[in-house]
Each structure stands twice: as C-alpha cells, then as structure tokens.
Amino acid sequence: MRMTKQEFQTIYPLVLGWIQRTLEHHAPAARPVASLGFNRLSLYYDKDTLTTSKVIPVTRVPVPPVSAMGLARFVEFEQMDMAGITYLDTYFVRADHIHDESLHFHELVHVIQWRLLGPEEFLERYADGLERFGYRNSPLEVMAYDLQGRFERDQQPFSVEAACQNLL
Image 1 (cartoon, rainbow, N blue to C red):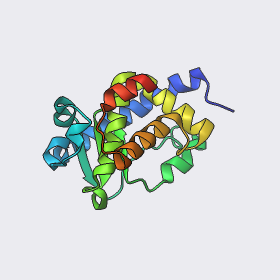
Image 2: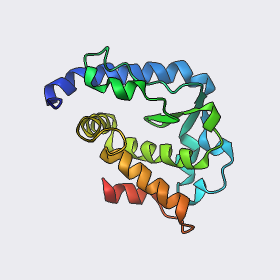
Image 3: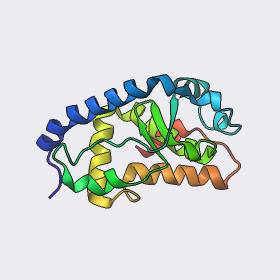
C-alpha cells in the first residue's frame, strides 16, 4: 500500500527535523563545493550554486531512520551504502569519493531539485518514487543519473538548472 497524504504529513516534520539536526551537527565540516576546485562543474552550474552549496565528507552517508519513524517499507533504502546523499543545499559524500567530479555533479542535481521543489515537495516526490519504482528507477534519481550521464559522455556544457526546470 502506498503512503497516504496523511501518513506523509505525519512523517514529514520528523524527517525534516532529522535533516536539520544532522546538517547542524556536521556544519563544522561543511565546505563550499567551489572550494574543491573541479574544472567542469562551473560549465554546468552557476557560481552562486557552487559557492552556496556545501559538501561534507564522511565515512558513511547519514540516512534518516525512517523505519524507526514508522516507515519500515524504506528499510532497504536506509541500509544502502551510498556514495553520496543530498539534503537541501548540502550533500554528504563518502570520503573515498571526494575527488569524483561526476558524483558531485549528480548530488548538485539534487541540490537544484530541492531548491526548485522546496523541501516538502522534494521529500514527497522522493518517497513516492522510492516506494513505487525503487531507488534507481525513482523519477528524481532517474533525472540525476540521466543528467550525470550527459555530463560524463558529452563535451557540450548545459545549464543543469534549466534542464531540471524543464524536467520537473
């Protein structure tokens, strides 16, 4: 059974609170994405995005304990050993992937999605996509992976923000 609107409205403040506490806890380690010195990101993202978006290297990316919050159907997502995850304008990257420009590109797609949709709609769409299609085939991930594929294959830069606006 899919998550109801009421169920989402109950869980949303818990997840958002967890995200805010997690970001506050890790804030001392956060640094602007621009400080990493990647050559190609500035061809796809504007300067403001690269200076205001933050990255935090970690040994394991933090994932909300949604099963403990009453959503046991997301336990598989909770247990994934992801290379990166994005919350609002900040993303966590496993330290062994800190130099992977393509991964940073992918996570910045999510930063743009969070910005364009707002936290509530982003989380609602993300949860719905996970539930209906699984992680890799959820629409917000498909968008990020497809744009990342373009970044990896094509030499022609494009505006990720414009691409996201067209796809959302």
